[in-house]
Amino acid sequence: MNGLKRYWKQLTVFFSIFALLFTVACSNQGGEEAKKEITLAYVNWDSEVASTHVIKKILEDEGFTVNLKQVEAGPMWAGVASGSADAMVAGWLPVTHKNYYDKYKNKIEDLGPNLKGTKIGLVVPEYMDIESIEDLNKVKGDLDGKIIGIDAGAGIMQATEKAIKEYDLDLELVEGSSAAMAATLKKAIDDKKPVVVTGWTPHWKFAKYDLKFLEDPKKTYGGEENIHTIAVKGLKEDSPEAYKILDNFNWTTEDMEAVMLDIQDGKDPEKAAADWVKENSDKVKSWTK
Image (cartoon, rainbow, N blue to C red; front, side):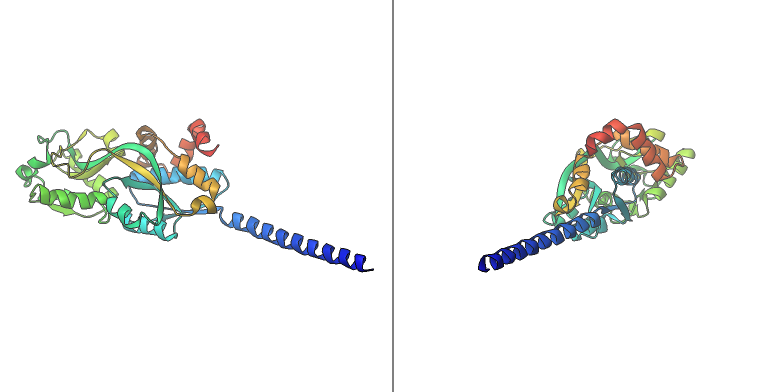
């Protein structure tokens, strides 16, 4: 009789443990389902609109629900650091976003470059007879005393403020947006007038117009840069599949400019990204395998 009681007691303990493990397994499975939703932050630069929509499409094709947050550079970095966004593919390093990286580096994970060989600086049409930032004061009247910039929080704007001081430029940096800058550049070129804008590559404007970077002898804008993928700490554990795709993502200037040009020519960013993904399936498979 005592043996039978011990048997039932052991059986009860076994089923209790089994039930607990089953509950935990179900709970974990539900958690994994919840982590199939990914939020990407990005700035409204032509380059980052292209890259973010491409990685969004790839994640969606792998079964993820992807939310996009369009913000300025500061909130983009802060959002990933705080976890309100899971990742971004728009970290310009080592110079453009240096201040943001230094501020948040302990709260984010740098997955490395997704595009190498970028550059920032001041850009003018080829027909302008100047070659260096040092020459800008000579033509300040022709420029109406203005450098045409983009959104205030962008790293290139901070670098340009520094350049104005370093080169003692008698010019005002005009805040705006990437689209407004491009529109001003187009109008000036159409009218064959002088203009200077904050510029970076990759950007569709270099494929469309005959432009040049002004020489930067003081190296205010730094040298060659890369665009990095940045993730919130813990994403690898919370969503290993999304982490793997983001970590593998890397492409070329030509890849990015193809998407940017499609968008500039009127194609919706979602459609431009989907078309590029379809046309580059082998490359995409190398990121998702």
